[in-house]
Length: 258
Image (tube, rainbow, N blue to C red; front, side, top):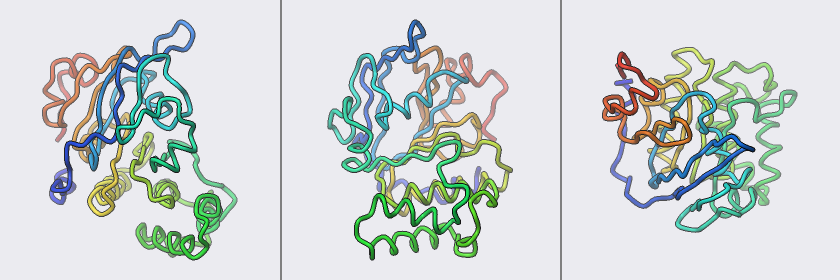
C-alpha cells in the first residue's frame, strides 16, 4: 500500500462534483435497497464504496449507468439531472465508462479483435479507431498478447483488457465493479497502480466498489460505507477505519489498513 501512496498526485483535484446522488431511494418489491442516500464524487477523485453483500453497491453503479431508475431522488452528472437519461446518452454525452466484475469481453476473439469490435461501435473515424487501439495496447503493455484469445488470458490480463475496452471511448468517469476479486497479491498491486495512473495521467474520475477493503482503501482518496440501505460513514481511508459507525457496520474492531 505504501508503494502506491508514494506517487499519488492530488494537485489537479478540486471540489467540483462530477457525480451527485440526492435523496435517492430504491426498492425491489417490499425490499428497500437504498434509503434516501445522498453523496457527491468530486472531479478527478478516486472514490470507493464498501459494505456487506446485498447492500446496494452494484445497484448504485446500475443507477449511475442508467440501467435502472430510482423510485425517488435525483442523479446528476456535471450538474445535469440525468435521472431519466437512457444508458447511451450517459455514455455518449457524459462519458461514463463501466468495467463489470465478470465478463465484458468476447471469449473467442483475440485481444486485438475485442478492441477492434468495440471500437467499431463507438468510434466513427477509422484512423482515430486505430490510434485508440494502439494507445490502450501500449498503455497496458498488451502488445505481446494481441493474437491471444481472451479466454486464454490470465485473470489480471483479462482485467487489463476490460479496462482497455472501457478506455476506448475516452471516459471522464470510470466505474470499476469488484476489480480486485479473485486475484493474487501481485496482480492486485498492478491494478492499483493502473487505477492511480489513470487518475494521474488521464485525470479520470474513478469509482470503485469491492469487498477487498484493504486493497480498495490503498488506492482511493475517499470512501463510504453502506449498511441497511444507508450511508453510515464517509471519509478519507485513514479516518474511515477509525470511525465508530464504520467499525460497527463493516470493519469491526480489529481492522487495520497496514
